[in-house]
Length: 275
Ligand SMILES: [Zn+2]
View 1 (cartoon, rainbow, N blue to C red):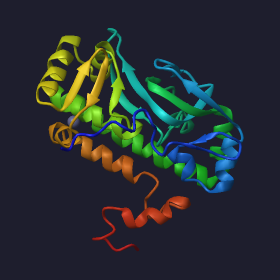
View 2 (cartoon, rainbow, N blue to C red):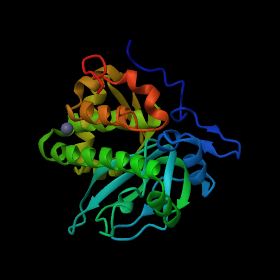
View 3 (spheres, rainbow, N blue to C red):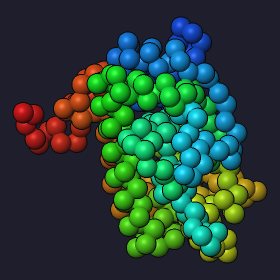
């Protein structure tokens, strides 16, 4: 009874409307900015489609472009010397691909690529860095999203070490659905194994268990979420931690800008007095 109908298909969060220039506007970071700040970035951006496996930046490299994702998903992946790899972060329409590189000159050991076919506004990294340095509002919002990504990263580090494959897979599927608003995700076993840092055979066993219990359907490289409520119950507690970070991004009471009006929705607003 809690299963979702899937009738929203591949429609991204907020079904990005076009702005006056015909550019899709479905990115929560951009939407959190004042009109002036948003336009200063959008006017320097180009709308792009990003197929699965598109590389957005390589490890150790300064990116040529940053991306405001408007639909779909990008994955941050850490690769080891022995060829193994694991996902250490995800970025959907809440964030900016390239935000970490704004903080300083240290090369990132992670790479970033598209995991679920995406649309984005692409801006030259140089232009974003200029805006980051010159606008207090843009800097504040960038720091907010970088903080969220950093906190998720530390949670994932604990999750990857301490939690079982089945609860991690459930957590991962929920995070995907939150960011894409789809019930059906196209993903190969090999890719799923890479994301979870597990063997393919392990992924098969774990996905089969969730399927047997009626939580998901997994066939021909597609995973369909059948029962979201039970999938939440099956996920590790990391999902709730990261979901709260994701939902409350750009809503913090001390933040300035357009997101202020959403403060009444904060979970602590009922029990904590604003200063
Ligand atoms: Zn976990």
